[in-house]
Image (cartoon, rainbow, N blue to C red):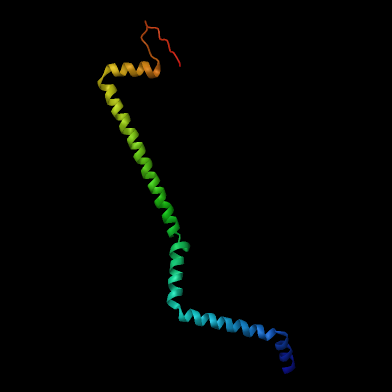
Length: 118
């Protein structure tokens, strides 16, 4: 039986197991020595990458919120301009007639309108 173990050792069979065990022991010792660093790295990975509400998704959501706020501001400005224009049209019939003639080509029944395009 000793002869078989020697042949395995010489061929590298037991030597690989010994090398693997020593690497595992070295790794374990390193982890034990740096347990706080390993814990912090694990926590950072959990918060930044693994968690369903991770930091990457939060940054994307913040960017989307900024874009949507800009869009809301843009449409609020358009709404305010339209309301001002509506108030002007409601208060002044001359402006209403001017807008109807210029924009929509409306005219009185006894008028002829000629449109000249440049």
